[in-house]
Length: 117
Image (cartoon, rainbow, N blue to C red; front, side):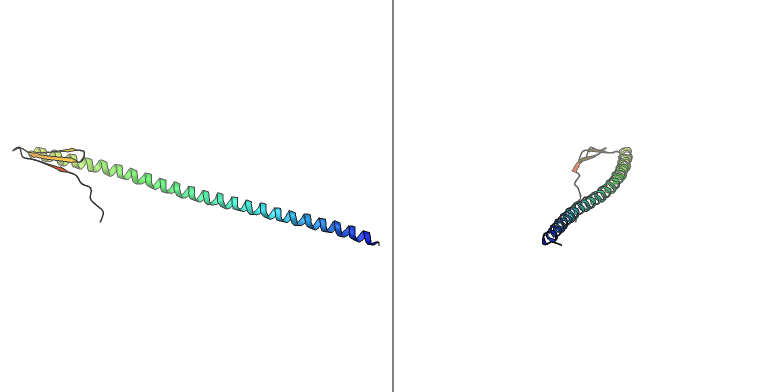
């Protein structure tokens, strides 16, 4: 063998080694990016599922509160009718409540929200 043939083989092997190294680096980068995209999609899916579950719970609570509000309004109406039959008129206008009796005495009060302790 001649000295030139060994150099040619070494050049080809070096070029092949360089191409394989570049390919491995590119493959690693692409695999990393693909893994990050899958992880991001998985996290996004979990967040969406959690938000949907929370929204469903909030809708159920809203329906319960509507039903409770209707029930309480009916109770207030019933109390007002019962008091009116006894000569006491109660009227509620927004956050103002006025109470008057058959003798003409009248009281007005503002409904105040209970402050958290």
